[in-house]
Length: 465
Ligand code: GLU
Ligand code: MG
Image 1 (cartoon, protein in one colour):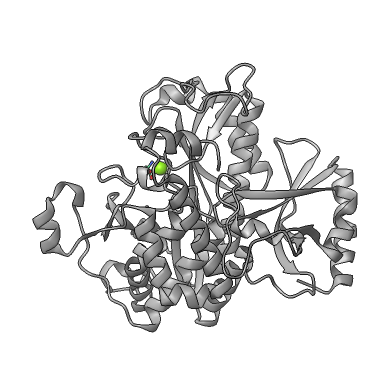
Image 2 (cartoon, rainbow, N blue to C red):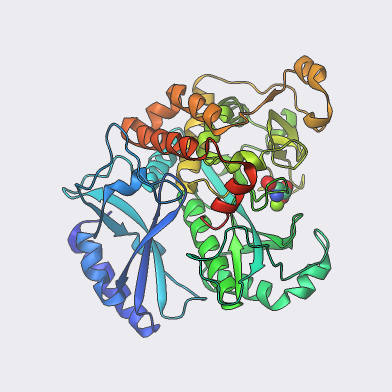
Protein backbone atom coordinates (compact mmCIF):
# COMPACT_ATOMS: atom_id res chain seq x y z
CA UNK A 1 0.00 0.00 0.00
CA UNK A 2 1.18 3.52 -0.73
CA UNK A 3 1.19 6.25 1.94
CA UNK A 4 -2.20 7.50 3.19
CA UNK A 5 -1.71 10.72 1.19
CA UNK A 6 -0.95 8.80 -2.02
CA UNK A 7 -3.90 6.50 -1.50
CA UNK A 8 -6.12 9.48 -0.90
CA UNK A 9 -5.02 11.14 -4.12
CA UNK A 10 -5.56 7.95 -6.13
CA UNK A 11 -8.94 7.41 -4.50
CA UNK A 12 -10.07 10.95 -5.26
CA UNK A 13 -9.47 10.40 -8.97
CA UNK A 14 -11.08 7.01 -8.87
CA UNK A 15 -14.15 8.31 -7.01
CA UNK A 16 -14.66 10.97 -9.70
CA UNK A 17 -14.45 8.27 -12.36
CA UNK A 18 -16.91 6.05 -10.49
CA UNK A 19 -19.30 8.95 -10.14
CA UNK A 20 -19.10 9.60 -13.88
CA UNK A 21 -19.80 5.89 -14.45
CA UNK A 22 -22.96 6.14 -12.34
CA UNK A 23 -21.55 4.09 -9.47
CA UNK A 24 -23.17 4.89 -6.13
CA UNK A 25 -21.89 2.12 -3.84
CA UNK A 26 -18.69 0.15 -3.50
CA UNK A 27 -18.69 -3.34 -1.97
CA UNK A 28 -15.46 -4.32 -0.23
CA UNK A 29 -15.03 -8.06 0.16
CA UNK A 30 -12.69 -10.35 1.96
CA UNK A 31 -13.08 -14.11 2.31
CA UNK A 32 -13.18 -15.71 5.74
CA UNK A 33 -11.61 -19.00 6.77
CA UNK A 34 -14.86 -20.87 6.09
CA UNK A 35 -14.74 -19.65 2.49
CA UNK A 36 -17.54 -17.10 2.75
CA UNK A 37 -17.03 -13.75 1.03
CA UNK A 38 -17.98 -11.16 3.67
CA UNK A 39 -18.61 -7.58 2.71
CA UNK A 40 -18.87 -3.99 3.84
CA UNK A 41 -20.27 -1.44 1.43
CA UNK A 42 -19.63 2.29 1.31
CA UNK A 43 -21.08 5.08 -0.81
CA UNK A 44 -18.65 5.66 -3.65
CA UNK A 45 -18.14 9.21 -2.34
CA UNK A 46 -16.53 7.68 0.80
CA UNK A 47 -13.79 5.98 -1.21
CA UNK A 48 -11.26 8.68 -0.43
CA UNK A 49 -11.85 8.26 3.28
CA UNK A 50 -11.78 4.46 3.03
CA UNK A 51 -8.52 4.53 1.11
CA UNK A 52 -6.93 6.67 3.78
CA UNK A 53 -8.38 5.20 6.97
CA UNK A 54 -9.87 1.86 5.98
CA UNK A 55 -13.35 0.61 6.85
CA UNK A 56 -13.94 -0.99 10.24
CA UNK A 57 -14.76 -4.65 10.72
CA UNK A 58 -14.44 -7.01 13.65
CA UNK A 59 -11.63 -9.61 13.67
CA UNK A 60 -14.16 -12.12 15.00
CA UNK A 61 -15.06 -13.08 11.41
CA UNK A 62 -11.77 -14.97 11.26
CA UNK A 63 -13.44 -17.59 13.44
CA UNK A 64 -16.89 -17.56 11.81
CA UNK A 65 -18.11 -20.88 10.47
CA UNK A 66 -19.89 -21.39 7.16
CA UNK A 67 -23.20 -21.09 9.04
CA UNK A 68 -22.26 -17.84 10.81
CA UNK A 69 -21.63 -19.51 14.16
CA UNK A 70 -18.67 -18.11 16.07
CA UNK A 71 -15.88 -20.23 17.45
CA UNK A 72 -12.55 -19.14 18.95
CA UNK A 73 -8.86 -19.87 18.52
CA UNK A 74 -6.00 -19.19 20.92
CA UNK A 75 -5.62 -15.75 19.35
CA UNK A 76 -8.99 -14.75 17.93
CA UNK A 77 -12.62 -14.66 18.98
CA UNK A 78 -14.85 -12.49 21.13
CA UNK A 79 -16.41 -9.10 20.57
CA UNK A 80 -13.42 -6.86 21.24
CA UNK A 81 -11.14 -5.32 18.63
CA UNK A 82 -11.44 -3.75 15.22
CA UNK A 83 -9.67 -4.10 11.89
CA UNK A 84 -9.47 -1.75 8.95
CA UNK A 85 -10.44 -2.96 5.49
CA UNK A 86 -8.45 -1.20 2.78
CA UNK A 87 -9.82 -1.51 -0.76
CA UNK A 88 -7.25 -2.47 -3.37
CA UNK A 89 -7.62 0.58 -5.58
CA UNK A 90 -6.05 -1.26 -8.53
CA UNK A 91 -8.89 -3.79 -8.48
CA UNK A 92 -11.90 -1.49 -8.17
CA UNK A 93 -14.32 -2.91 -10.74
CA UNK A 94 -17.64 -1.54 -11.91
CA UNK A 95 -20.13 -4.40 -11.62
CA UNK A 96 -21.98 -5.15 -14.84
CA UNK A 97 -24.84 -7.11 -13.30
CA UNK A 98 -25.37 -4.78 -10.33
CA UNK A 99 -26.03 -1.33 -11.81
CA UNK A 100 -24.72 1.46 -9.60
CA UNK A 101 -22.30 -0.83 -7.82
CA UNK A 102 -18.57 -1.38 -7.90
CA UNK A 103 -16.47 -3.93 -6.07
CA UNK A 104 -12.98 -4.11 -4.65
CA UNK A 105 -11.15 -6.82 -2.70
CA UNK A 106 -9.84 -5.63 0.65
CA UNK A 107 -6.68 -6.15 2.67
CA UNK A 108 -7.08 -6.17 6.41
CA UNK A 109 -4.88 -4.17 8.74
CA UNK A 110 -4.81 -3.67 12.49
CA UNK A 111 -5.75 -0.21 13.68
CA UNK A 112 -2.10 0.74 14.13
CA UNK A 113 -1.48 0.07 10.43
CA UNK A 114 0.29 -3.29 10.74
CA UNK A 115 -0.97 -6.11 8.49
CA UNK A 116 -3.51 -8.24 10.34
CA UNK A 117 -1.73 -11.57 10.93
CA UNK A 118 -4.82 -13.52 9.78
CA UNK A 119 -5.35 -11.53 6.57
CA UNK A 120 -5.73 -14.22 3.94
CA UNK A 121 -5.15 -11.91 0.99
CA UNK A 122 -1.88 -10.65 2.44
CA UNK A 123 -0.88 -14.26 3.13
CA UNK A 124 -1.42 -15.00 -0.58
CA UNK A 125 0.66 -11.95 -1.48
CA UNK A 126 3.43 -12.90 0.96
CA UNK A 127 3.68 -16.39 -0.54
CA UNK A 128 3.70 -14.92 -4.06
CA UNK A 129 6.57 -12.65 -3.00
CA UNK A 130 8.41 -15.65 -1.58
CA UNK A 131 8.06 -17.39 -4.93
CA UNK A 132 9.28 -14.25 -6.70
CA UNK A 133 12.29 -14.10 -4.37
CA UNK A 134 13.05 -17.70 -5.42
CA UNK A 135 12.96 -16.54 -9.05
CA UNK A 136 9.57 -18.10 -9.79
CA UNK A 137 6.76 -16.38 -11.60
CA UNK A 138 3.52 -18.25 -10.98
CA UNK A 139 0.35 -18.06 -13.05
CA UNK A 140 -2.81 -19.40 -11.49
CA UNK A 141 -6.50 -19.63 -12.25
CA UNK A 142 -9.58 -21.22 -10.70
CA UNK A 143 -12.30 -22.97 -12.65
CA UNK A 144 -15.74 -22.05 -11.35
CA UNK A 145 -18.43 -24.74 -11.36
CA UNK A 146 -21.97 -24.07 -10.21
CA UNK A 147 -25.44 -25.55 -10.29
CA UNK A 148 -28.26 -23.27 -11.32
CA UNK A 149 -31.85 -23.70 -10.18
CA UNK A 150 -35.03 -21.66 -10.46
CA UNK A 151 -35.83 -19.47 -7.49
CA UNK A 152 -39.10 -20.76 -6.05
CA UNK A 153 -41.86 -18.16 -6.38
CA UNK A 154 -42.13 -16.13 -3.19
CA UNK A 155 -39.06 -17.85 -1.81
CA UNK A 156 -38.25 -16.84 1.74
CA UNK A 157 -34.86 -18.23 2.73
CA UNK A 158 -35.75 -17.93 6.42
CA UNK A 159 -38.95 -19.92 6.07
CA UNK A 160 -38.43 -22.32 3.24
CA UNK A 161 -37.35 -25.82 3.92
CA UNK A 162 -33.79 -26.52 2.84
CA UNK A 163 -35.13 -29.78 1.44
CA UNK A 164 -37.27 -28.08 -1.19
CA UNK A 165 -36.89 -30.06 -4.41
CA UNK A 166 -34.52 -28.35 -6.81
CA UNK A 167 -36.16 -26.94 -9.90
CA UNK A 168 -33.65 -26.93 -12.74
CA UNK A 169 -34.12 -24.40 -15.55
CA UNK A 170 -32.55 -26.76 -18.06
CA UNK A 171 -33.08 -30.44 -18.67
CA UNK A 172 -30.51 -31.20 -21.36
CA UNK A 173 -27.90 -33.91 -21.03
CA UNK A 174 -24.50 -33.50 -19.40
CA UNK A 175 -22.22 -31.35 -21.57
CA UNK A 176 -25.16 -31.12 -23.99
CA UNK A 177 -25.77 -28.31 -26.47
CA UNK A 178 -29.41 -28.55 -25.39
CA UNK A 179 -28.52 -26.87 -22.11
CA UNK A 180 -26.84 -23.99 -23.91
CA UNK A 181 -29.95 -23.55 -26.06
CA UNK A 182 -32.20 -23.68 -23.01
CA UNK A 183 -30.20 -21.05 -21.16
CA UNK A 184 -28.63 -19.08 -23.99
CA UNK A 185 -29.64 -15.61 -22.71
CA UNK A 186 -28.40 -16.41 -19.24
CA UNK A 187 -25.06 -17.80 -20.36
CA UNK A 188 -24.54 -14.90 -22.74
CA UNK A 189 -25.19 -12.48 -19.89
CA UNK A 190 -22.70 -14.33 -17.66
CA UNK A 191 -19.92 -14.09 -20.22
CA UNK A 192 -20.81 -10.52 -21.16
CA UNK A 193 -20.79 -9.33 -17.55
CA UNK A 194 -17.44 -10.99 -16.89
CA UNK A 195 -15.93 -9.52 -20.04
CA UNK A 196 -17.18 -6.02 -19.20
CA UNK A 197 -15.49 -6.41 -15.82
CA UNK A 198 -12.12 -7.13 -17.40
CA UNK A 199 -12.20 -10.89 -16.90
CA UNK A 200 -11.01 -12.75 -19.97
CA UNK A 201 -13.34 -15.72 -20.33
CA UNK A 202 -11.73 -18.77 -21.89
CA UNK A 203 -14.77 -20.99 -22.03
CA UNK A 204 -18.15 -21.73 -20.56
CA UNK A 205 -19.79 -25.14 -20.77
CA UNK A 206 -22.48 -27.36 -19.32
CA UNK A 207 -21.06 -29.80 -16.77
CA UNK A 208 -22.10 -33.29 -15.69
CA UNK A 209 -24.65 -32.78 -12.89
CA UNK A 210 -28.19 -31.46 -13.50
CA UNK A 211 -28.15 -27.68 -13.92
CA UNK A 212 -24.35 -27.59 -13.67
CA UNK A 213 -22.11 -25.22 -15.65
CA UNK A 214 -18.50 -24.13 -15.58
CA UNK A 215 -16.64 -21.02 -16.58
CA UNK A 216 -12.88 -20.84 -16.91
CA UNK A 217 -10.95 -17.61 -17.30
CA UNK A 218 -7.45 -16.42 -18.11
CA UNK A 219 -4.83 -17.11 -15.47
CA UNK A 220 -3.03 -14.32 -13.64
CA UNK A 221 -0.69 -13.83 -10.72
CA UNK A 222 -1.88 -15.76 -7.64
CA UNK A 223 -3.53 -12.85 -5.81
CA UNK A 224 -5.29 -11.79 -8.99
CA UNK A 225 -6.45 -15.38 -9.52
CA UNK A 226 -7.99 -15.42 -6.05
CA UNK A 227 -9.61 -11.99 -6.59
CA UNK A 228 -10.98 -13.22 -9.90
CA UNK A 229 -12.44 -16.31 -8.22
CA UNK A 230 -14.45 -14.01 -5.93
CA UNK A 231 -15.49 -11.68 -8.74
CA UNK A 232 -16.49 -14.50 -11.09
CA UNK A 233 -18.63 -16.13 -8.44
CA UNK A 234 -20.39 -12.97 -7.35
CA UNK A 235 -21.00 -12.08 -10.99
CA UNK A 236 -22.52 -15.48 -11.74
CA UNK A 237 -24.67 -15.06 -8.63
CA UNK A 238 -25.81 -11.58 -9.66
CA UNK A 239 -26.59 -12.57 -13.26
CA UNK A 240 -28.47 -15.61 -11.96
CA UNK A 241 -30.59 -13.40 -9.69
CA UNK A 242 -31.44 -11.12 -12.62
CA UNK A 243 -32.73 -14.18 -14.47
CA UNK A 244 -34.80 -15.41 -11.52
CA UNK A 245 -32.24 -18.15 -10.90
CA UNK A 246 -30.03 -19.19 -7.99
CA UNK A 247 -26.49 -20.43 -8.25
CA UNK A 248 -25.00 -22.98 -5.86
CA UNK A 249 -21.22 -23.21 -5.67
CA UNK A 250 -21.34 -25.73 -2.83
CA UNK A 251 -19.13 -28.81 -3.05
CA UNK A 252 -22.15 -31.09 -2.76
CA UNK A 253 -25.43 -29.68 -4.03
CA UNK A 254 -27.19 -33.04 -3.83
CA UNK A 255 -25.59 -35.76 -1.72
CA UNK A 256 -24.41 -38.66 -3.84
CA UNK A 257 -24.40 -36.69 -7.11
CA UNK A 258 -21.41 -35.15 -8.90
CA UNK A 259 -20.40 -32.02 -7.01
CA UNK A 260 -18.97 -28.61 -7.79
CA UNK A 261 -15.20 -28.49 -7.95
CA UNK A 262 -13.10 -25.34 -7.97
CA UNK A 263 -9.97 -26.70 -9.59
CA UNK A 264 -6.81 -24.67 -9.29
CA UNK A 265 -4.57 -24.40 -12.36
CA UNK A 266 -0.97 -23.32 -12.04
CA UNK A 267 2.06 -22.91 -14.23
CA UNK A 268 5.61 -21.92 -13.43
CA UNK A 269 7.98 -19.57 -15.20
CA UNK A 270 11.48 -18.38 -14.53
CA UNK A 271 13.20 -15.46 -16.28
CA UNK A 272 10.28 -15.20 -18.68
CA UNK A 273 10.52 -18.85 -19.72
CA UNK A 274 8.01 -21.59 -19.01
CA UNK A 275 9.30 -24.35 -16.72
CA UNK A 276 6.89 -26.66 -18.58
CA UNK A 277 8.82 -26.34 -21.84
CA UNK A 278 12.28 -27.68 -21.01
CA UNK A 279 13.82 -29.46 -24.01
CA UNK A 280 14.70 -33.12 -23.42
CA UNK A 281 13.17 -33.13 -19.93
CA UNK A 282 10.50 -35.70 -19.10
CA UNK A 283 7.11 -34.06 -19.73
CA UNK A 284 9.03 -30.85 -20.48
CA UNK A 285 9.27 -30.14 -16.75
CA UNK A 286 12.33 -28.28 -15.46
CA UNK A 287 13.74 -29.68 -12.18
CA UNK A 288 12.18 -26.87 -10.16
CA UNK A 289 8.77 -27.54 -11.70
CA UNK A 290 9.11 -31.23 -10.78
CA UNK A 291 10.10 -30.36 -7.22
CA UNK A 292 7.33 -27.76 -6.88
CA UNK A 293 4.65 -30.14 -8.12
CA UNK A 294 6.05 -32.95 -5.98
CA UNK A 295 5.88 -30.63 -2.98
CA UNK A 296 2.23 -29.91 -3.72
CA UNK A 297 1.43 -33.58 -4.28
CA UNK A 298 3.17 -34.57 -1.03
CA UNK A 299 1.32 -31.90 0.96
CA UNK A 300 -2.13 -32.66 -0.47
CA UNK A 301 -3.48 -34.45 2.64
CA UNK A 302 -2.80 -31.30 4.69
CA UNK A 303 -3.80 -28.97 1.85
CA UNK A 304 -7.23 -30.58 1.79
CA UNK A 305 -8.04 -28.73 5.02
CA UNK A 306 -7.59 -25.55 2.98
CA UNK A 307 -8.94 -26.62 -0.42
CA UNK A 308 -11.76 -28.87 0.85
CA UNK A 309 -12.69 -27.11 4.09
CA UNK A 310 -16.24 -28.27 4.81
CA UNK A 311 -17.77 -31.58 5.83
CA UNK A 312 -19.73 -31.08 2.57
CA UNK A 313 -16.43 -31.23 0.68
CA UNK A 314 -16.06 -34.87 1.64
CA UNK A 315 -19.45 -35.75 0.18
CA UNK A 316 -18.07 -34.61 -3.18
CA UNK A 317 -14.77 -36.46 -2.83
CA UNK A 318 -15.86 -39.80 -4.25
CA UNK A 319 -13.70 -42.02 -6.48
CA UNK A 320 -14.48 -41.95 -10.22
CA UNK A 321 -16.24 -38.56 -10.00
CA UNK A 322 -13.36 -36.53 -11.55
CA UNK A 323 -12.71 -35.00 -8.16
CA UNK A 324 -9.15 -36.36 -7.73
CA UNK A 325 -9.44 -38.28 -4.49
CA UNK A 326 -6.22 -40.29 -4.78
CA UNK A 327 -2.82 -38.84 -3.99
CA UNK A 328 -1.28 -39.35 -7.41
CA UNK A 329 -0.53 -37.38 -10.52
CA UNK A 330 -1.00 -38.16 -14.18
CA UNK A 331 -0.65 -36.66 -17.61
CA UNK A 332 -4.16 -35.55 -18.61
CA UNK A 333 -5.56 -38.01 -16.07
CA UNK A 334 -8.82 -36.53 -14.77
CA UNK A 335 -8.92 -38.94 -11.84
CA UNK A 336 -5.49 -37.94 -10.52
CA UNK A 337 -5.50 -35.30 -7.80
CA UNK A 338 -2.76 -33.52 -9.73
CA UNK A 339 -3.35 -33.49 -13.48
CA UNK A 340 -0.47 -32.42 -15.69
CA UNK A 341 -1.66 -30.62 -18.82
CA UNK A 342 1.16 -30.62 -21.40
CA UNK A 343 -0.59 -28.23 -23.83
CA UNK A 344 0.14 -27.97 -27.54
CA UNK A 345 3.82 -28.78 -28.17
CA UNK A 346 4.31 -25.65 -30.32
CA UNK A 347 2.73 -23.34 -27.71
CA UNK A 348 5.58 -21.75 -25.72
CA UNK A 349 3.14 -20.80 -22.96
CA UNK A 350 1.39 -24.16 -22.98
CA UNK A 351 1.76 -26.50 -20.05
CA UNK A 352 0.17 -26.28 -16.64
CA UNK A 353 -0.98 -28.44 -13.77
CA UNK A 354 -4.40 -28.69 -12.19
CA UNK A 355 -5.28 -29.53 -8.61
CA UNK A 356 -8.62 -31.24 -9.11
CA UNK A 357 -9.44 -31.92 -5.50
CA UNK A 358 -10.22 -28.35 -4.37
CA UNK A 359 -13.79 -27.07 -4.21
CA UNK A 360 -15.71 -23.82 -4.00
CA UNK A 361 -15.93 -23.81 -0.21
CA UNK A 362 -12.22 -23.01 -0.15
CA UNK A 363 -10.96 -19.52 0.54
CA UNK A 364 -9.11 -18.89 -2.74
CA UNK A 365 -6.48 -16.69 -1.07
CA UNK A 366 -5.64 -19.41 1.45
CA UNK A 367 -5.64 -21.96 -1.38
CA UNK A 368 -3.11 -20.15 -3.57
CA UNK A 369 -0.93 -19.21 -0.59
CA UNK A 370 -0.88 -22.71 0.86
CA UNK A 371 -0.16 -24.30 -2.52
CA UNK A 372 2.76 -21.94 -3.09
CA UNK A 373 4.09 -22.71 0.41
CA UNK A 374 3.89 -26.46 -0.32
CA UNK A 375 5.52 -26.06 -3.73
CA UNK A 376 8.38 -23.95 -2.39
CA UNK A 377 8.90 -26.53 0.35
CA UNK A 378 9.12 -29.12 -2.43
CA UNK A 379 11.88 -27.09 -4.09
CA UNK A 380 13.74 -26.63 -0.79
CA UNK A 381 13.67 -30.38 -0.16
CA UNK A 382 14.32 -31.36 -3.81
CA UNK A 383 11.10 -33.42 -3.80
CA UNK A 384 10.64 -35.88 -6.66
CA UNK A 385 7.49 -37.01 -8.44
CA UNK A 386 6.61 -40.70 -8.39
CA UNK A 387 5.64 -42.44 -11.65
CA UNK A 388 2.60 -40.85 -13.29
CA UNK A 389 -0.69 -42.71 -13.12
CA UNK A 390 -2.56 -43.36 -16.36
CA UNK A 391 -5.62 -45.12 -15.00
CA UNK A 392 -8.49 -44.30 -12.69
CA UNK A 393 -7.11 -45.43 -9.31
CA UNK A 394 -10.68 -46.01 -8.17
CA UNK A 395 -10.99 -48.94 -10.56
CA UNK A 396 -7.70 -50.62 -9.62
CA UNK A 397 -8.63 -52.43 -6.44
CA UNK A 398 -6.99 -52.11 -3.04
CA UNK A 399 -4.04 -54.43 -3.69
CA UNK A 400 -3.08 -52.87 -7.00
CA UNK A 401 -3.30 -49.38 -5.52
CA UNK A 402 -1.07 -50.48 -2.64
CA UNK A 403 1.40 -52.01 -5.11
CA UNK A 404 1.57 -48.72 -6.99
CA UNK A 405 1.83 -46.72 -3.76
CA UNK A 406 -1.39 -44.81 -4.42
CA UNK A 407 -2.96 -43.51 -1.23
CA UNK A 408 -6.53 -42.23 -0.78
CA UNK A 409 -6.56 -38.59 0.28
CA UNK A 410 -8.33 -37.81 3.58
CA UNK A 411 -11.94 -38.96 3.43
CA UNK A 412 -13.10 -36.73 6.25
CA UNK A 413 -12.52 -33.16 7.33
CA UNK A 414 -11.22 -34.47 10.65
CA UNK A 415 -8.46 -36.41 8.92
CA UNK A 416 -7.52 -33.46 6.72
CA UNK A 417 -7.52 -31.10 9.71
CA UNK A 418 -5.28 -33.48 11.64
CA UNK A 419 -2.79 -33.46 8.75
CA UNK A 420 -3.03 -29.67 8.50
CA UNK A 421 -2.43 -29.33 12.24
CA UNK A 422 0.81 -31.31 11.94
CA UNK A 423 2.06 -29.66 8.74
CA UNK A 424 5.21 -27.73 9.67
CA UNK A 425 5.54 -25.98 6.27
CA UNK A 426 1.95 -24.71 6.37
CA UNK A 427 2.26 -23.62 9.99
CA UNK A 428 5.48 -21.76 9.22
CA UNK A 429 4.02 -20.14 6.11
CA UNK A 430 0.73 -19.04 7.69
CA UNK A 431 1.99 -18.13 11.11
CA UNK A 432 0.33 -19.20 14.33
CA UNK A 433 -2.59 -16.73 14.21
CA UNK A 434 -3.85 -17.64 10.73
CA UNK A 435 -3.03 -21.34 11.07
CA UNK A 436 -4.78 -21.44 14.44
CA UNK A 437 -7.87 -19.65 13.12
CA UNK A 438 -8.19 -22.00 10.14
CA UNK A 439 -7.84 -25.00 12.40
CA UNK A 440 -10.39 -23.67 14.89
CA UNK A 441 -12.95 -23.16 12.12
CA UNK A 442 -12.34 -26.69 10.77
CA UNK A 443 -12.80 -28.16 14.24
CA UNK A 444 -16.04 -26.19 14.70
CA UNK A 445 -17.39 -27.43 11.34
CA UNK A 446 -16.49 -31.02 12.27
CA UNK A 447 -18.31 -30.72 15.61
CA UNK A 448 -21.39 -29.10 14.06
CA UNK A 449 -21.86 -31.80 11.44
CA UNK A 450 -20.58 -34.83 13.39
CA UNK A 451 -24.04 -36.41 13.77
CA UNK A 452 -25.61 -35.02 10.61
CA UNK A 453 -26.36 -37.26 7.64
CA UNK A 454 -25.17 -36.59 4.09
CA UNK A 455 -28.50 -35.30 2.75
CA UNK A 456 -28.79 -32.78 5.52
CA UNK A 457 -25.17 -31.60 5.20
CA UNK A 458 -25.74 -30.96 1.48
CA UNK A 459 -29.07 -29.23 2.10
CA UNK A 460 -27.79 -27.01 4.91
CA UNK A 461 -24.64 -25.93 3.07
CA UNK A 462 -26.12 -25.71 -0.45
CA UNK A 463 -26.48 -21.93 -0.61
CA UNK A 464 -23.72 -20.87 1.75
CA UNK A 465 -20.91 -20.13 -0.69
N1 GLU B 1 -17.51 -31.61 -11.20
C1 GLU B 1 -16.26 -32.30 -11.03
C2 GLU B 1 -15.72 -32.01 -9.63
O1 GLU B 1 -16.38 -32.26 -8.70
C3 GLU B 1 -15.22 -31.91 -12.05
C4 GLU B 1 -15.56 -32.14 -13.49
C5 GLU B 1 -14.40 -31.68 -14.34
O2 GLU B 1 -13.38 -32.36 -14.42
O3 GLU B 1 -14.46 -30.56 -14.83
O4 GLU B 1 -14.66 -31.53 -9.44
MG1 MG C 1 -15.36 -28.94 -14.68
